[in-house]
Amino acid sequence: MRVYLIAEMASAHDGDLRKARQLIRLSAAAGADAVKAQYWSSADRLADRRHVPGDYRALYHRYRMPRAWLDALAETCAQSRVDFLCSTYLPEDIAVVAPYVTAMKVASFEAGDRAFLEANRATGKPLIVSVGMMASRAVTALAEWLVEGDALLHCVSAYPCPIAAANLRAITSRTQAHPQYRVGYSDHTAHWLTGALAVAAGAEVIETHVRLWDTDRANPDFASGISLDYSGNYNYATYVGLVRHAEEALGDGQKVDGSHNPAEQAMNLYRVRS
Figure 1 (cartoon, rainbow, N blue to C red):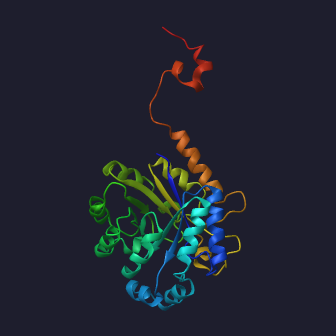
Figure 2 (figure 1 turned 120 degrees about the horizontal axis):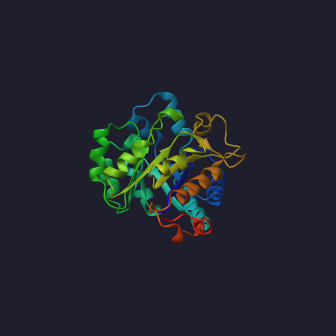
Figure 3 (figure 1 turned 90 degrees about the horizontal axis):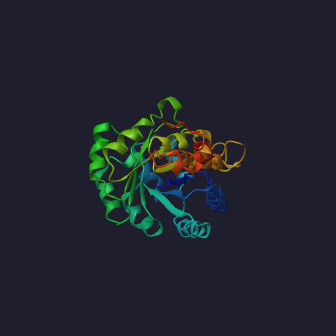
């Protein structure tokens, strides 16, 4: 199965619709399958719901995406031939976003709210759920609730996530325990190699934060160090390319005789036979 790659723009648009559209086009050109935004209708409601301190409340106000952007971003995604995704965080926003997206994305912070999950399920769209900060028992309970077509994303909610904390073997464990749905990885490392390693661990969906080279350095998606850009040698296109190489290198797991393997045809002539 081809790995489904989600470019997460988050707040890297700096409140500028032109930048948001540019993020979509560049992500599509780099090889993403989907681009994801974030929508909350009320910064104060979100801050109250998550019980965050005042500096977070200010960020929620600063980077709140206008509802009118949903039409524009969905249209740009369609023109760029990538899926449009958009996280929601408030129950009242689910019905607003659902008509625009191909799947409902639930962030780690809301993944433990069963009523919120049920409201997303009621849209009839597949769910993609990140499980950062959740205990293993809670992840197992959530996994048993998911259905075919949904995706569960291993995630470490650290910004950035140290490589030593990524624990990519958790992907393998979940894939083996729950083959009925897709298991993936929401990557906060901003390292160009972790996507390929996640594929080797069994990931079928990979979400990675992206930003522009001129994203405001005070923007949390720049300042936190979790986002890849599109410039330099180790960028989002590099990340995508390594994921695709990993897919090819893994193959189908079946060992065949050299006479039936095109790559071994030349050397097969000299094989010693008893």
